[in-house]
Image (cartoon, rainbow, N blue to C red; front, side):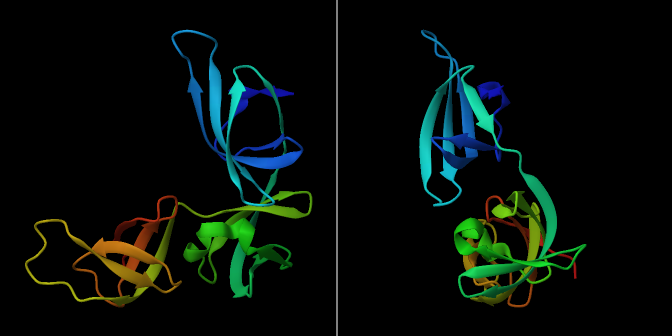
Amino acid sequence: MATTSNIKNGAVILHKNKRMKVIEFLHVKPGKGPAFVRTKLKDIKTGKIIDETFNSGAKLQFIKVEAKKMQYLYEDGNQSIFMDSQTYDQINVNDEIVGSQKGFLKSGLNVDLLFDGQEALDVRLPAHVNLEVTHTEPGMRGNTATGATKPATLETGIDVQVPLFIEVGDVLRLDTRTGEYIERAKK
């Protein structure tokens, strides 16, 4: 059995008879008293996020998850449909599992799906995705010295803040971890 020293972001542990994904963790060594690990855990089934503190060296049960390369196909109601790139099998994943990452899913995007046996636990997106701007207000000329931004709606429906020179039809590179604009993608 592993201990708190094995905790890392994205790990899945069994805690209080629930599968929990570690979102963030912090080893704390106070000046007085024993060290401990402060974590933020997400219940995989319900999506609820809790704060939990473990004593340093406490025993934890890690769940071995398997990652499979899958391709996002389309959205069907409250489910996203993915296809295994080798076997062409399709799997339906509920929106609770996909969560806020849904705005970065574009048809044909390759992702990693994490499985515990046959059950899908999580979707891992690539670090960057390219999405096209479908709507934004025109920028004012000469107003670039301040680094000002404006909202833009992308092809998947999400809104991001972009520099004033971005226009409808531009393809943008976005960071999927923060949801922020990085640069215009090469055409």
